[in-house]
Amino acid sequence: MPPQAERIFTTHTGSLPRPRALTRLHAKRSRGEAVDTTELAAATEAAVQAIVPKQLAAGIDIPNDGEQGRESFVLYLRDRLTGLGGESRRRPFQDVEAYPEFKESLLESLKGKETASVTGNLPAATGPVTYVGQDAMRAELAQFRAALDAAGGAPAFMAAPSPGIVAAVVQNRHYDTDEAYLNALASALRAEYAAILEAGFTLQIDCPDLALERHGAWQDRPLADFLDFCERVVAAINRAIEDLPRHRIRLHVCWGNYEAPHDSDVPFEDIWPVIRQLKVGAFVLPFANPRHAHEHRVFRRLPLGDDQVLVAGVIDTLTQFVEHPEVIAERLERIAQSIGDPRRLMAGTDCGFDTSAGRGRVASDVVWAKLRSLAEGARLASDRLLKG
Image (cartoon, rainbow, N blue to C red; front, side, top):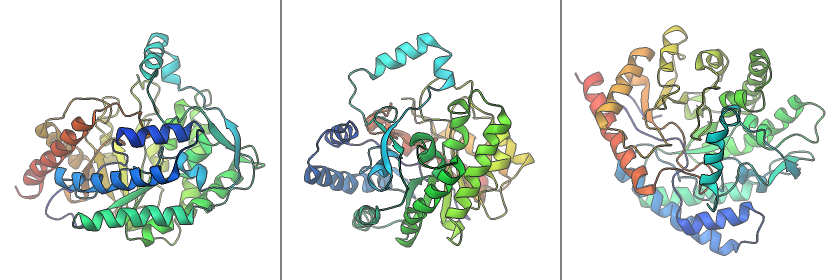
């Protein structure tokens, strides 16, 4: 993390809009269709080369590669893990099923849209899970480093999924217990976590499972059962990052990057006592969306660790509204009051803008306007909180 003494730095949560041609290739590949690997590699390289300077020009201090080379934030691992085959079936989310008219309109909106699916064509774990993606990871990191250096350089991050969200999406058909499966995933994913850090980037671990799965796989179970699942995921992550530099690891939690009622979401105050046990340097949390915007107040009772930073989501990644810089500044000021120290606050987005290629709801030109507004809002908040 950069020093936080003079101003509030800006970042985002991961995925950014992909070019249409690249999205089409990812969608075909997701469906199991043949794709020209040379064409895909060239399209990815061009997209990464373009996305890095655009982030810096928009005022993003800590950029990434926009996840341009990944079909989704989690399913890219199907080529980097052994033991995958068969099929998984995700349970429909509780808040979608509770509103039949909404569900119908949601399905209608997806008709004819070319996307990489995170609900269909999902593999399962049918054998021992190990990591074999070293070459792909090295190539991805080198590609990003080249684009970053060409743009003048900057501190940067790269994301990788948590063992918990992989276990939720790629369901266990091999291991005797779910805990054994979680541990195998944690061991496998450590290779990717370590590679990102060794390349000089901040590691972001994506953990939507620690909130999302309450109204997914655990929707009919007592809260205590879900929290027990969260405890096991937290323990697995802590094992996976043991001896890695915690000040260069940040962790993202959300309730699902999809527009829906979200009135089945587990309250942040229920999960934060478990999440705060994670041995990371920063948390990336969504406080822009209207279901959770008030929950930063939880930090007044259960604060961050003394050496931890909050990357506060103050931009909604699901609406075309371009938040006014003054709105962003006000959000940051309120959150700073809750955590007690604005020097431990960074400005970010609620989630990625295109977590599965082609499914992003916000138009590309609006995304860049939102990020420019984020930078301006962070500047205003910095002037008031750190220079006033």
